[in-house]
Length: 468
Image (cartoon, rainbow, N blue to C red):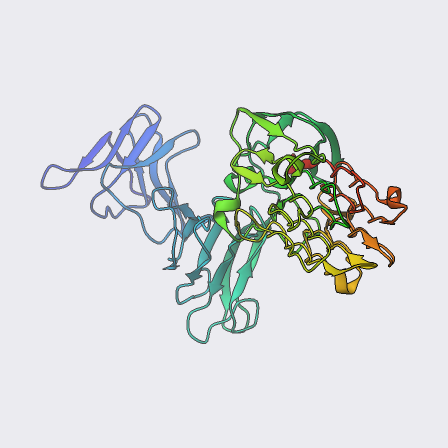
């Protein structure tokens, strides 16, 4: 015969409620009650048993644990308890049944897995979308395995999340869920100004004259706000007189943020944090330096500076009078062993340019030194006075060489060639009109001559950032 007890409330001997029913809500706590069925006074089951199956409550009821009570033996449902109050920023050991937010923005670290038994579960997610820059390493406990191998795993994809379940000692931890969709309400840099082109996920703003880079939105990923840039100053002019050297190239400064992939020049200064420009929602004035024009002094013939935010590239030095002038790259010296000007003046790291070449000779064999370029020094008169090489960057999606030094002028010998990257060719006496200007928007130095007045090339500013 089946026993039934019909009550709305069961209390233990100390007066604490063991089973209560209020409307459609049943609450069970406290001690064990031995019976095949317990019913409330309205006939609804609180507890019933059929064979080895125990049923709590009736259809439509809600089963609650009393405040402060706990449960055990019910097992997990394939989910984890996310530890939102403890964001991980350094190496830690995970616990079964927990999920973690890993913030690697300050550097890579390791999540050590617990000693696994069948059914254990652990999850982790990229908190700051920086796994691609600073990886998270997952290391198994002792001789246990991840996917059948006793070795660590590396998470290196932006926004990645994984869920690992321990199956057995043969395979160990198996990845049952892997998301790289990175579903976030993120934003990207948005801006106007200059001539705008697109390359993949990047926008490129090119300024060939003065303007403003106006930022209207920034990225929710802080590192992406450090924009890539190329800032080149105006090249130096030649100075009127005896066979003079070529003008120095304008200063060359570049930063390539890894978030904006392209092939940068060897002068990429991203590794030096002081070179980085983190944009904010504001207007950044852009100055594009003009090429130097021949004047009554070396200072007058020097190229003008180009400026973007905290970054200034110095105008190229003028060719000799008789020594070359200093600047981003130095101007070449005149004939008669007069020295070229100093490059990378004022000094920055990486160097923004190189020295000009020394002049050579006298009488019927006079040669000016080549102007310095972004990539190499200007050649001395003893090696034909060629201008220094410029540097090549694909920041605008096309490999382009800029900031070449001007070739030196000569008497009695072939004139020096302009350095690759817009450097003007030198002229040979008496037809010194063959000397050429530096190319505009490359920062190339002017070619030297014999009383041939040539200008340096104007500079350029290019800014690149991830926009999607």
